[in-house]
Image (cartoon, rainbow, N blue to C red; front, side, top):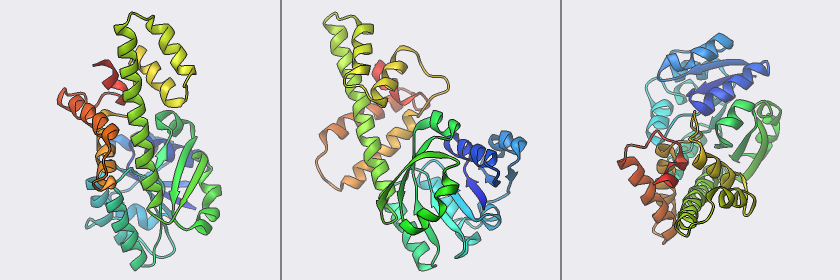
Length: 280
């Protein structure tokens, strides 16, 4: 099985690294080729276009930033679809809007291409350790076939139904995680205002209610992460996609959290860790 990774940011690089370590032949493409240099040194082959990377591989993962970058690498003059064939497995692992993923599902179905949406969660640490959680939509039988390959980069997988459902769950997940981070910040603000011992409060909240997001947010509240886990830019983009997915449904918690992240962008904090809103 030959693997192509289209987009070598935090998540794509982590995946490529572990596929290489797993003995797979890996082809990579990135808009800024210098960002793939470390992977080349490890044994990956840098390709000139997404189309060329796709032609070389059996399984193709697209891991770019947003709808715009995704659309460009799938539909461009040298895009993934032009290098595809019915014997390849096409996977979108970016966090994208449900509408754009549905377009991709339709285009791939028309050409009889095998397509799964497989957003990732777990952040930088999971990507770098090969312990990503995969949130999957698509043919379950095909998923069973490729699970041994996916084990190289993941420790847990959830299947939600037809192609497009993995993306929908990822947006819901980022919605509740963003709201949770916002809620922790507000809770700490109240604790500070009433004169509580902030260290004692934060440590206790990390235990009750606890959970990975509370613990991460409290850790980052105390010490700014370097490198970041997930940026203000990315979570704001995802929350906007969720708002579009809600299709007019009233979502006051989401609206409040999205407003705070948009304020963070106005304060030029887009490249800061997504927990930065708790320090306002």
